[in-house]
Length: 305
Image (cartoon, rainbow, N blue to C red; front, side, top):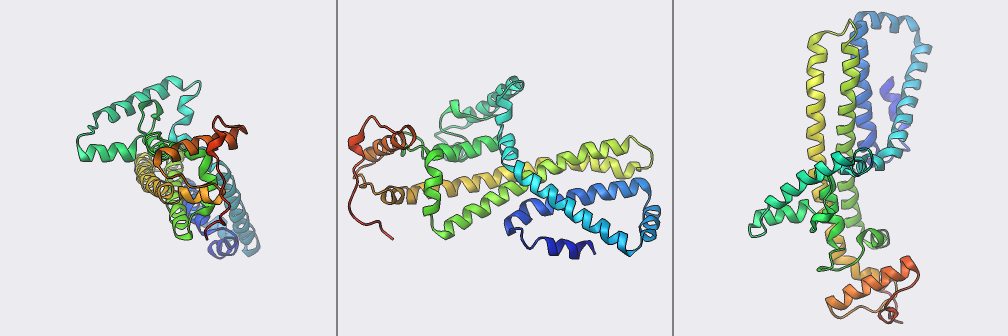
């Protein structure tokens, strides 16, 4: 009964939303429900359920589906904040500043242990850390995403503001690359949701464990498995972030000049000229003026494609 109602209600949910939020949320609440029923007693709960009758059972199932969908919608609203939390931004703010500085210090030690002369270490620093130590974040996930964010912004590479230009570049990407980016981002978010819900499952189990009725063989393994699953899911999210970062780098490498063409600008002939153009263009678009307006030379050629 519950499954058929759920099938009817997910038709308007996107495939990405179902995999990222709905399935982990369903597992979370099903686990809590199993703990509560175990606490009450399965035979006692079955007797109460059978005594309700078909109409009340249907009403309860519909209410459960509605509650689950409301939870998913709320989770979708806070998902960007959840990602930023796991990146470590909240650790950099008061009153967690000291903890954030400790996290950055630990990440700096990891960064310093990687030798640029060793190809493996260089690869790890390239993928897992931003190029400058001042940009380090308190968490591994934050550094993996910051590394991708800093790739195009590096003045020794392209010198373009990746955060500012990404919303303008993304619509120009081919469907295959956008699909790959969406899948990688969905995988990252799914693992973070799983990590957060696994961590949230622990205090619920602890509260039920403090009341009589929940057997020790039930709540003790749950208190152990919950944090372990949260840690594993977070590590999987970091791995997904590394793959997502490589796709972001590829997008800037292969399509950044298509953005210049779409804006009607003449393409620069050298990398040095391109760096200067990106900086002048960012100034013009963001601050409505630029120190070098002569670099913004428009072409009358029709855009390609």
